[in-house]
Image (cartoon, rainbow, N blue to C red; front, side):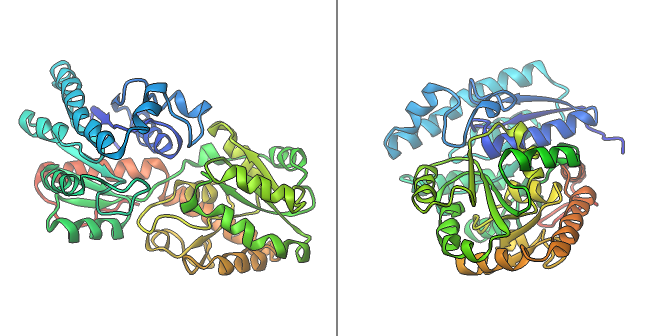
Length: 405
């Protein structure tokens, strides 16, 4: 496909690490492969191509970011509002240098509005990727919620297009704000070439972590309360003795990691529950190679978990909660299995049940990988994005989904 786009600016206010870094690189690299020049404007010092390799989800890209994050919530939010001036100044300088820009692709951030206003003034299309919102429950509850909602309402109505990661997220924003710019639904993705391994790599990884001769159920991601991997381990701990064929391989770190490691050691489960700690993102495919299945104990009810797509791309059969965004990409019994969201006992039962069926694990893993190959690589996402951009320019889209194979 010949893409009729020559230059795109990716603008974001994240630290460019962990999951957001994966997404930024996924979109940017896919566009560049198609011959599109992509420039990135971000927080000073937050390079998504350097910081993730040495960072965990709980570390800051630069010391000053840690300082800002420690501000009391009212001051933190005022700093977010003030950053509009920095973003607009940098964006204006960029637009003056690149009159050939086709569109701006911005990762939406709370209290951010001046880039959208400036894009409208300069006649440059603004397409906004929505991963956050003032309408959702937050780890840091908003202090200036009315202001955040007012800015979000204006931004969502005045952008040229919106890209939501799930339909439930779009519907929630629509219910809260009454009207939105034209919107599409684009779940996350994973590139097959990044998650391909040889039998030798699988054997080496399993040997390194003492996993030979066992069915391995893995987890990859942040150890934080809302992903509930600690709750899952606590729930399954008493069942492991009756399932000697099964081992857990848990990859990552975060706020709940120290307590979980202490629990595993106190219970004498270190040979059954392997905790790798923080690893570089480049090491992830090798660790996935050691897994036969994977568990996602919990997720946001509106989010599109990147780790789910990485499991599937690697041919690892996933067990995940039945939130609507996950139902949009998983086919029960064909590309994965789902349990009632919030029911940790059901999650444990599913893992124990399917870990005993080697043929089902092989079949579902192969189907999951085939699904990602056909429908959910980052190239699929940018083809949909370019089609959306064209439709916006022609005035032929509305509150609908535009999907590409």
